[in-house]
Length: 638
Ligand code: FEO
Ligand code: CA
Ligand code: CA
Ligand code: CA
Image (cartoon, rainbow, N blue to C red; front, top):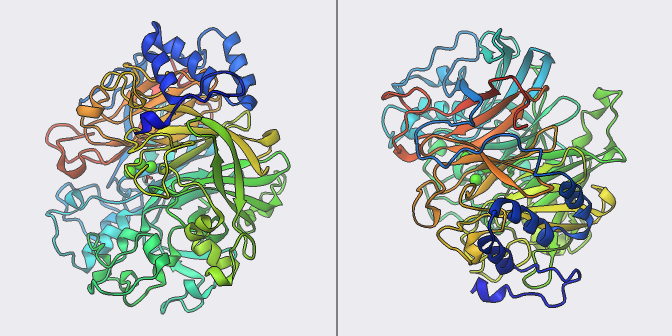
C-alpha cells in the first residue's frame, strides 16, 4: 500500500525526485553504493536551507569526518570496536559507588540496602561533568531493572524489601571517574561526589504546575514534593553545569488490584491501567496504587534537573517542559540567549516538543541560570508535506492556556493542566503523530536538529496515524531519522524546513522497495530502530540502535544492536561498533578532549537470552558502561 501511495511528485520545485521509491531505486542500481548513495540522499533529501551543507561536503573528497574502518554486523556475545580501537568496562550494574556498599553479588539475594549503594541497573543516557583534565563526574540514568537477574528467582510475589530493592535499582547514579596512567579511566568508589538518586529520593516539583490540585496526594497535600524518579531514559546537559534526566515509561509502575477501577481519558492516554502489575510496587508502596492515590502518576513523566557537583542538592522536576514519556532533552542556547530544549515523546503516534525559555542564559553568572527551565513556552511540532514528499516545512504550535482551544471548555482550565496533560493538549492543537520520537540532537556548529523515529507498527493502521511526511512507511519496521532547520537558523522561530537524513531498511531482503531504505543504507551498514543520537564536538553524528537483533527475516544481516556514525553533510553512515547478545546500545558521552568515548550497553541477555557480558564464562549478564579509546590516543571517529 505504501508503495502505491508514494508516487513521484511531478511538480517538485527542483525537478529532483523526492519519492521514496526513487531513492531506493537509485541505491540498488548503482555501483559504488556508498558514495553514490551519499550523493543521492543529499540530492533528494536536502531541503533548500540545507543545500549549503551539501555543497560544502561535495568540495570535500569523501566524508573526511569518518576516519575509521567499519566493523561488520555481529551476533557474537562481545563488544566489538574498529581496528585500532580498544574497549573496556568502566562500571557494571551492582558495582558499589557509595561508601560501605558491598561488592556485586550475582546470587540475586542482596537486600535493598545493598542496591541503594550500588550502581543502578540498565544504564541509559549519561553526561560527563569535568572536574579537571583527568577527573570528572559521570551522571548516568538507570532506566529500569530485570527481575530475572535482580532476584534469585522470578519473584512471583515481591515482599516489601523486594519492592524497595527494585526501586533502588532505578533512578540516577553519579560518581567520580579518574584517568589512569595508561590513559584509561576508572571510577572512584569512595569519592564524596558519589550519589544515588532512586525511586524514593526527595525531589521538588517546580515551574507552572507545582502545587496544582492534580499534583496533590495524601502524603504531599501541597503538591510540591515528590519521592523519586524512575524509568529515566535519556538525558540532557545544561551549560550551567546540571544534568537533565528524562522520565519515560512511568505508567508501568502504577496498578490496582481491582481491574474495574475507573480511569479518566487523560490517565488512559498515558497508558495507566489497573493491570500493569508486573513491577508489583503498588503491593507494598501505596503511592503506586491507582485506586488510592490517583494523582501520584501525575508527578512522574517530567524532566528532572540535578546538580551533580553538589551531592546534597535537591533535584527538581521542571514542569514547564511538559509531562509525557520523555526520551531525552536536547538543550541548546539560541543566538539571543534563550534556552531551547527539544524533546521526543517515545510512543507510537505521539509527538515532538520544543521548550523556549523566557529568560536568557548568562554565561557570567551561573547562579542566575539555575531556574531558567521554570518559565517559558512549550510547543509541539506539526510537519507539513505534499503527498509522497520526503521533505517539507513545519510549524511549532504553542501549548498555551487560552489559545488554540486549550481552555476550560475543552478540559484545560489552566496552564498547569495543559502541561500535566501535554499529550491531549498536543492533539487539540493539531500536532503531527510521529513514529516514536526517541533522542533529539542539535548540531554543534549550525542550527540543524535531528530526531530518531525508531519504528512504528501502528503507522497507517489508524486514522490518526496516516502514512506520509516524515513518517512515510506503513507498519514501519526499521525507523528513520528526521532532520530540520529552523528559519534563519533561529531555534525560537515558528517555522522550520525538514527532510530525512536516513530511512533505515534492508536492501538485501527487500531490494527495490521502500523497505530497502534510503540510498545511504547498504549491505555493509544496515541497521534498524535508531534510538540514541548525539553529536561529538566535530559534528559527527553518532547513532545507537535499540532494535530487532534476531538477524533473521526482515532483519537478516543486521546482527546485534550497534552504534554507527554519520557525516550529516554527505549522508554517509558507517558502523562503528557492535554490542553483545540481546543488548541495546544506549548512552553516550565524551571526555572533553574527545579522545575517550563512554558508551552504554543496556540489558545484555534480555529475557534470558544467552549473554554473559561482560564477565564471560557462565557469569550473569550485567548492563555496563564501556570506555572506548584509540590505541594511538587519537580523537574518536576521526
Ligand atoms: Fe528508553 Fe524510548 O527509550
Ligand atoms: Ca531509547
Ligand atoms: Ca527504543
Ligand atoms: Ca532501553
